Image (tube, rainbow over all chains, first blue to last red; front, side, top):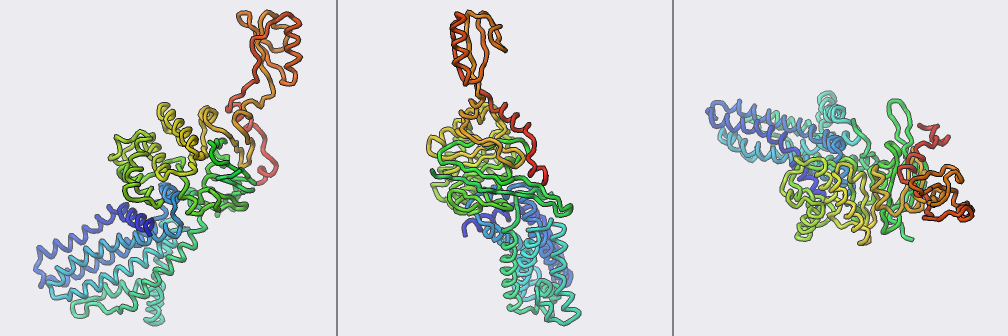
Length: 236
Length: 307
């Protein structure tokens, strides 16, 4: 477990600049909360809140899709995997790292959302529920992207991830809402996007649990694929 | 005899996905490294040295054949816990040197005061004790290589696998690394050293293997390889150089070489001519000569077929 934690924390640390840049949007929400009339501009605040939520979902794909590529291109992966670290542990570290990076953001957004939206009579418990949904969606999206990045470059990995995550959304739209639960990133994302002061989030904990279970499944699949990848081969 | 690193008939082919071309980097490669020796692993660029090392470390899978690292199959994390590895191009995270070494030590299961103490110790060994709190991202290539060595040694490994460990070092630092490696061998460690610095390998390696186009071209004790010319140099005085073919004279001293099996006859001829023998020594070749000889050898038909 120790190597997994070390790799995860190291990954989050390496992503500190993208995370800090991303946190500027949360800062914007906080700034708006300070300078606007919260009750009168509450719909605008909710819009910015949702916008910030969508950004982290996109970033989770970016984090997951580029993690292995960046490590291989810089050859830093050799230093880590030359130690007593199995490939499965390495991938677990990256999955956890992506989740930690997104969790930091979700926590900051949850805190700011609790203050701004909470002041505008949005239930604070629902803000945190939405953050849990968002984090579950990020973990799953990041892990799917990570799986593709074990054998594709980040550009194609992001594309493949978008297709895989978009398919249930499309199928849900065309064939029925149950299809949206196949890979519930869209379902969870939609919970955040569709939340309003009248209806502050409707997804069930079951969907969150399903996302967690699928994260584990994709992580195991990634580890299976990654076990056969020649990591010392140039990736350019 | 215990072997710490064994390659058994290992072949590694790289396949290009687009063109379906195959490049055989290693071709039925077998090698066994004994415990407690400094083993020199030589070959020109593209000979397959790094491929062999990466296979041993489990960074890639062989196309066929297998191997063992410290008694375990290639890629076993448990075996890697007892290995120190330095890659050819050192790539480290940008953080303070001491933290960096501690990070790599912790990945090997070390921790607590033992790790703190060892991290400071290895940084001192590589001469970076005054830079322990500097960010490695601001280090020169030579300093990075030294931090790389420190992280390789932090777990006090039984086997050190070093790919070009002195390529970026100045002469002073090279001497330091040389002494460090000799010290490690004297302490019972095994060192598998890939290097292009042949003079260095000649100085410290007990055995040497030369790889050419994925195949093992030479293998043996360094001293045996250097003396394997089969000729003896004889230095004499008080005779004319014209008596021996290829003899050179300078200040009354005549030197020439003869096949080792003909040295007795040559010496008798010197004495019969009234000459005086100054010295008789086997002709020593340099590793560079052997290296050039190996790289000039033509491709085997098998290698030609797949390149």
